[in-house]
Amino acid sequence: MSGQRRPRRRTRLLAVLLVLAALQLGSLAAPAYACACGALVPGPSRQVTVGREESVLRWDGTREQIVMRLTVAGDADRAAWIMPVPHRATVTLADPALFDQLHTLTAPAHRTRHHFWPADGDWPLTTGGATSPVPPGVGAQPPGVGVVARQRLGPFDVAQLTATDPGALDGWLRGNGFALPARLGSALAPYVAERWQYVAVRLAPETANTTLHGALDPLRLAFASDRPVYPMRLSRLAATPQSLGLYVLAAHRMEPRTAIGGERPRVVYAGRLSRPTGDLRELAAGTPYLTAIGQEFPYPSRISGDHVLRRAAADTPFQQVVYTDRLSTLAGVPAWLLTVGGTLLLAVTGVSLAAVRRSRRPVPPPPPTQPPSLAQPPQPPAPIG
Image (cartoon, rainbow, N blue to C red):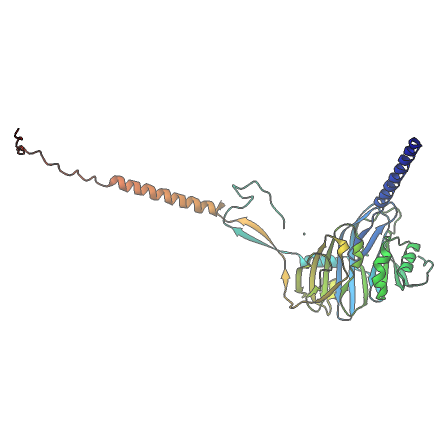
């Protein structure tokens, strides 16, 4: 009996290991990626990565606009993500040139500074290297889900939804081709409780057999809001570290209220716009102050909520400065070498002159010696024996 049980146990153990391996391979075949705005996932057996995400948040005190652009890579021919918004939104395409303007405006200033002593890379310290300063038809609608609108914008299939039940919302998304992560229902629960609405976006190229690659057309979302808020809670679903780059247009310099579980937010640019053009001119009308904010989230599971922005204490302008260090030279010769060489030359010259002066001094004659006396000193008397 014992001899028959052992093969059975081994067979069961092998079956369990095979099931676990199949589950692991299945999870690797279609991984879920979260961007700072929501959850992005590819189709079955496909992969997609967000190499860069850029967003512009514009708030005039009563209404908010968010312009988003994703740069993706992978072999997926379709993907989907969802963006929670506090009120009903209008969705349109935006001009990609908007981000080119923002890149130019917020680029670091380049300045040159000189150093006297040789640094790494300068002769004779030549061991080191140079360093560089970092968005068809409507399917069945289950109870608890309302379809406000459905539209096609370029490569995007956009559905605007309301929901009173996170499970019903998750079911509608899956039933209409928006395959999103299994944990999405629980992640959406706080938004459902606060009666937010949702913009579900499915990315599908207009040309068949074309993969999603490169910078996608930017999407513009506009909705009423009594406070500037950038949804971040769904990024808790991410399995890899997340990076946020956010341009904020408002009447004054803005800042996040808290770090919401990430590293400390950093301002990389702040300043009042003088002569914006194109889409940026439209966005900046009434909101002329631009604040660029960067933040890292090494552990996305720690994200505790959405970014709520507030006015900074002062409208102090700020721009990053990238310095190029150069060795001070004179006529092509390092200044330190001229200084040190000149100092050594002066020292050697001084020592040499001192030695010459010493050699030219007259030698004093020796003191005269007294000749011995001819007279013999008196002898003491001999003792008397």
